[in-house]
Length: 427
Image (tube, rainbow, N blue to C red):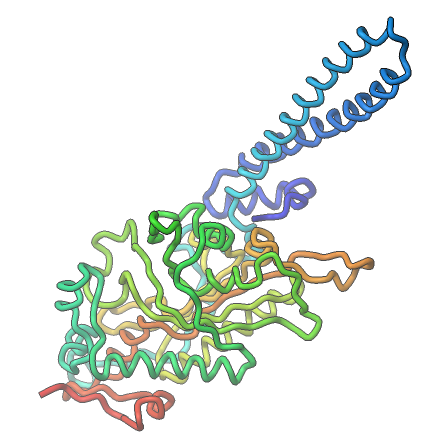
């Protein structure tokens, strides 16, 4: 949730953000109107309450002859107080509802537009020229089946479309990726976490995943719980309604979890393989920090993602995601997209988002304001970033395949595969 003070004091900033996202800027005027009605009704309510109290004293001191008239006035005033209180509450509810519908205000410099309006920040590495090497690259499914690493057919038989089994070296490769990610995170001072994958509605809503994209989330009505699509959700609620201590720096967590996504609206897209699936595993970095430190922390998370991709020896590019392609909580997002040879294009492998104070305001996560006295508190900032996930297997298999059908294992992953340096087809 954005700060109502920002809407009051800098409405044009919010309007520009709405426009950049392709969302309705008119909601700003609706919020201001509801807020003004709430404040006006509240002021009238307080004045009427004061008058009501004064009348109470007059009634107590009045003569028997005067009391009936005064009591009638007290009754009318009580009805007015009740009406003004209800009006203030209704206007407050409407302002809160409208405010909750507004996505986070994008940061200065974020490209406007939709999915195709990103800006390439940097390209790292050069894709292999398979034609020059004299062979046609195989896609990750063909490779995965040959290696005994991926079984799509039985995944569909057991669970339906967009499910799969990782088998043998496929399962080991995923575990190697995730364990390397956790090791890197621990080295960088992150606390490793195994998180719940079911959360309450207030946590899912607070994280910002039920506003415009609720159709992408699995819901269990019998339990009133949601399956999470990222450990970001559980970690965003970890310090809910707490005052945390950031005097010694940000709180950094690395959550390992299974993730579940309905992929609503993706019919016909990436129907083959493990790029767009309903279930996968991921190590997600999550940070609580002071608002003024958020942009620097964002660069830090991006640097960690880059180091992981470099360790996996993958060509990739970094894009500054356009405002209309941001999730509701993100004020800015950088994606690292790995090259997929058989598709001839870059595909998202990681993303890192600066959510500023959006999630923490909804979830009541605060710190003692270092610039204020008397124990005043302020809302903190949150950030997230993917350090490894199942989808990386696609890029690793395709980019490191050899003419004989084997796949070379990047050196950084070999210790987590028992020293295995080459994945060989199952004979």
